[in-house]
Length: 198
Image 1 (cartoon, helix red, strand yellow):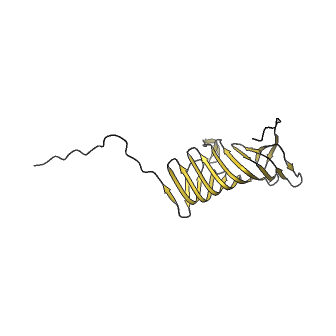
Image 2 (cartoon, rainbow, N blue to C red):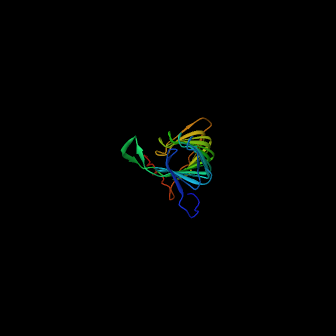
Image 3 (cartoon, rainbow, N blue to C red):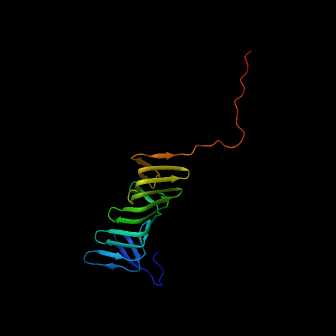
């Protein structure tokens, strides 16, 4: 959240594809739609919260460019298959990076610099990533490393569904490591001795 200066934060509603943006300072050109937020802010869309150190954007084109300690939290249920009556539970996730470009029309978040994604026991890092808020697909590219408990996946390009947990690996080389199962503790069972016929 914006730093506490003893005052209620300012709020801009329905801007750059977000329901509202909380800020302490904002410079806005009402003719062009260009704006600048020079300090920490919070942007909220149903189920998604974005915070960063600074931002520039355009309210008419619904674009936002966030920089510095960017954090995107997603934590709501999501509609399944476009059926508003059918909900699929969504495990909360967090995406962090140095820079983030948001297209409020297509709901695309393009992350660059120290990209890190975490969800429950899974986490991943990559050079860049694109999160589609509409389809719940995360496209990670460049030195991708995913970890799920003791399982790891390394590759050049990985597409990960944040709802189903399915991952598709493309490009090479790709390396998947799965730990070997260890036998449970206790005495080993031995086969019964064979009976002699003579």
